[in-house]
Amino acid sequence: MALRTDFPNPETEYLGGQSDGYVYRTVFSGATLAASFEMLRQFLKEEGYGDVPLPGNVAELEMFRLPTRNRQILLFEDNGYVHNPIKILFPNHGKQKKALILEVYNEAAPQHLLRFHGKMDKR
Image (cartoon, rainbow, N blue to C red; front, side, top):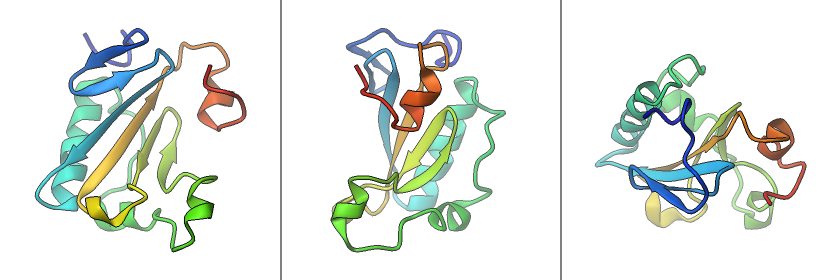
């Protein structure tokens, strides 16, 4: 089963992440941020998302981090790299400096693009 061709049902755990049927969420946490990013890249490739453009390395990925300490802004914007159907996000708190949050959106779900861009409820 590959995530892209067989998206997990709601309330399903898949390879350590959770799915609500619309979005699959998981966290990659390695010894370094570069190691976390490499694990994430490999996961996406194995799960059928090898054609989705990604930053070339962790230095490029970090250029997508919001340069703000104002946590209110982080409530309204994605803090990381966004390219349909994936989001690679930095945790909003500094305790997980080596972690990356991966959100993969179900391309077959109704109103997928609206949901991906946060233009509707996730219900």
